[in-house]
Length: 529
Image (tube, rainbow, N blue to C red; front, side, top):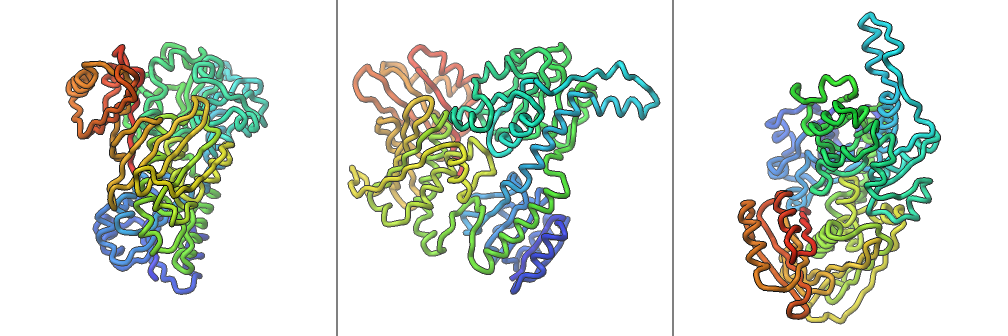
């Protein structure tokens, strides 16, 4: 079986592939797009890093491809939908560089606290400016951590070791889970008000893009220092530059940016108060060896024994059964993704009910799919079918699954109920056909919506003019409505509207909807599986 490695790879990983029985290694780092299409034609497995784009065209050209391995966490270079359509398993190594990223965060924090890069540049320029580079101690300072997943937890541990006081903002974690880390769970405003150092460890999505914008930066503790080794786009870079100029923010250490490589017209480029590194969060010899060894073993195990580990698009099961279960797995993951973005704060308990025909299948993979959908918007691309249950348990979430033959009007359905800091909320879905997924209920309201792409979920008062106002606001924002469903329990009571739209709704349009006196809430959800 041919294993094509298309990016630079550690020797330790190559040796695993070279020594595996029945496997022929084709090591061709740096292929052009055209060369990749030629090489992948007869490949059984493809292993890449971040330098190779595995597009729909690549999957179409690969006649016998069974698995793609990504050495690392990020999958921006991977067309997962095309892989799933082709029946190709995609694996990554979600935790191989977690320690390295946490350590880089603290390297940046310490360099920022003591002005090390600027002081080094000064002395190499022939100057001795001891008084110019007055720094601050980190001991006794408050460390604000936004997002306490795997990497955020490691950052908290290291902060405690340096005698810092860690505060955590993570609306998806229960208070007890954060307390067990040795940190305190706080709301966003308190985190901003008290943090001497602020570090981000969250995925980039519609909710977190430019989380640190001009308004937020104006509310941070004066003299705060900001570190981002997570994702570009979490910080409004123009607003950060202005906050540094006016003295509200003392400085920043950034490993990731909105646009990479960093354009020379970026305002942060020449600011002495800003430390920049070129996406080095996983750039250690140890991490490179870890992820290449890990992905090599995963690919060998899959090709030789059919073992699936850290799969992004399929749980571990026999191929024939996977084909039958695929529509239910997709529905389960879509329901999790929908609920996560709608209401899944401070999760304490998750109840999943399987009803009707679906219970003829083992429900464990379906529960994995629900959890993957639920946790991916929270933790990002590190989440897969295999580690999703572990991440849930690590966050202190209780998971309960139930089965019933009472169909309640549908041949099959899956209901997800989450209990957290904002109460109890539920969503149910059913299959109307092989690939016809529908949301059939939200918080007890009977609805019908397709859980795919961009959806707008509105809670409103039931009165004349609501639908017209929604349509007008979306039309003014040039957002086309594909499907709209309105449900109520009684006349002039509370209602819920689910609106499928063709594109992302601009923030200004969302705010215009929320400003209407008859709308209680308006939430944008993006379901992409």
